[in-house]
Amino acid sequence: MPTQLSSRLKSDKESATSVLVAKVAQLKKEGRDIISLNVGEPDFSTPTYIRQAAEKVVADEMITYTPGPGIMPLREAIAHKIKTENHINCTADNVIVTVGAKEALYCGLMALVEEGDEVIIPTPCYVSYPDMVKMAGGTPVYVPLDEHYNLDAAAVKKAITPKTKAIIICTPCNPTGSVFSENELAKLADLAVSKDFFILADEIYEKIIYAPAVHTSIASFSPEVAARTITINGFSKSQAMTGWRIGYAVAPVEIIKGMQTIKSQISTCVSAVSQKAALAALLGPQDDTHRMAEEFEKRMQYVYKRINAIPGFSTPAIQGAFYAFFDIKPYMGKTLRGRLIESDIDFCEYLLDEAGVACVPGTPYMHPGAIRISYATSMEVLEKAMDRIEEAVRL
Image (cartoon, rainbow, N blue to C red; front, side, top):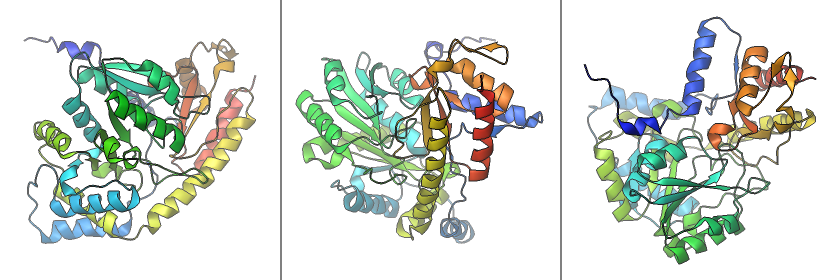
């Protein structure tokens, strides 16, 4: 029986965070006391009114396939949200509903990128961006964020070539927790228009933001910028709906049609139940979202203080999302409890084995010498985890 898999799998790999989730699950199954700070998943339940809307659909309606781009009431509600909150002019025709924000990003790249195209990716970046670009036939071009993890438009400008097709930005940013400034976004917007490339703007964490930081949708700057932008968002983070697998993209109609062509061959449509739940999430009260953001801010302040109090650790101000991404370079080359730490990967394996705390190394985020932790867990768990980490790195 033939066993040769496709050549694309030689360069592409499973998401590093997904691999770690599986490893942690196995360790817990074996009875290990593991604290998981590796998963970007809110520890809150989906708000009651959203779950009740889904229950009503299951009880009262015939569950069938839906239109590929999404049910019209949901697309209209998304368009209204984007116009009123993000200040991007659009209609339902500019909206596609997807199986999570990841599918929106994948379909967007597949619709735009051809063999030989270059896609700029500011780093540190979300672990899936580079491999998605490669799957689309493109070449990732990495451009570091500045020392505060803000977008550096001047560095982006230097990386632009005749082959540049697009840039992927994430603000608020996974993994850094930074929020890109309006000034740098405006400079990037000008570059996109003058150099004629596309912007894929991942805004999945827009509701989790800490004053004085302010979220700005880059497509809101002008119609010319909007014509070159795919704005990607969803319900996983803001509404604690990770397992519902529902996201969306907003873009010019021609791009949305292209994305739908790709999507039609992948997933046909998003679950009808999830779409009705998402509609309830948009139309219902936003109190739970605000409450979650307030709780995340309390946890952020605690984690930020603890990280910067540990010798050898440092991180800039955290402005959004629910991650801390911090430098651990002073520990590289050191020996901890008889183990030589030569990389951020070694460091995370050490914390997992010796402290029972799961973190993610910076290398998959294209930024070696750092690690990411998620504080999307209770304060009690965070206190225990930070105590373990501090004890594990005590020289």
